[in-house]
Image (tube, rainbow, N blue to C red; front, side, top):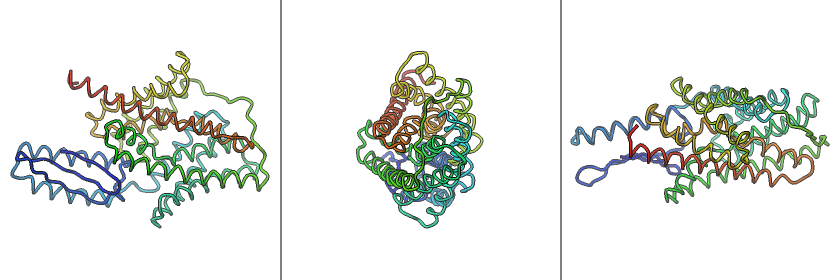
Amino acid sequence: MGFNSLGRIVLIDTTLGDGSTISTSGSARSLDLIDCSRSRRLVDCAHQLSQTVEDRPTDVGEVVDRARERIQQLRETGTPWWVVTAGTTMLAFCVCMQVGVEWRGWVSAALVQAASCLVGVVTGKWQMPKLFAITAQGCVAGALATALVQLGLVSPVAAAAAIAVAWLILVPLPQVIGAVSDAINADYLSANSRIASVAVAALGIVIAGAFTFMLGEVLGMEHPRLDTLPSLPWYLVIVFSALGAIANALANGGRWPLVGPAAGLGVITASVNLMLLDWAGLQTLWASSFSGVVLGAMAAFLASRTGYPRQVLALMGITGALMPGIPVFYGILQQMGGGQGGASFGSAAAISVGISTGVALGGYLMDLVRRRDPI
């Protein structure tokens, strides 16, 4: 039995005792794996199909028909837009606090993210292609942050932090995780599909960035200056990592059963990352990658107990504790100041790949342990 999502196709298949295969498939356009509850229900559906093959092989055809009906029902469901908006707004607030700017930056990040989400709702109703939808959301985020500066409500530094968080949330992190995992497992077709999805989102953000920086120059916005970057105490970093993970869980269709695991993953991942950064003195890239290994192992462990796919659980830990907000923030500051932020953006991309590789390695190691000594 297997479950796979490739491009626009969702496929559930099972192999019978005589070697023949029964499968059901459909369009994945509205069946988004980021929706935590739908992912869990899909896993349950696949498990039921597998159990029927083992217990009642003669009833497989009937179960496959029910699976088709179940997938159709899931395709027609989704997380309400206001839940997504509220969750990602809270996530933006928590991530911006971890970046370390003043409180106006935290509030600005929440406002900018709320506006970006509302634009996403509109583009979704219009079924706008992903490139244009991401570009529109990124441009609105940049324009609103610029307007807040022009109105004297926030500083350019706070606006840069708000923009950085909004653009980071537009990056399809599950696709990054999935692409690395597929490449490691030699599933290159699926990996290429996910890489293309990430590339389209990145291109949309690049276009939005060019628009935002041009708008700032046209309006004569003051170049941001940052002498020191204030930081939160370690215990507050852990608290807001947990809150960020919870916010993302709710925003992506999670229910109350996911809140506890999400908070736990946020706390554990943030704690490991802080120890590697502050006590071991590792660079951010290596600290994030090793933290990803721990996160991947924990996600694999919890997946069998919660029913949620490990990619969903890993996403909670990443958004709560490992999002590369500071490199993106510095890159935007450099671009707004007339410099070159390419190195900072490249660092953020490297950190994202490192985290994804670490998550895949952690999951693999946990699978090895469980095969040798079932937990």
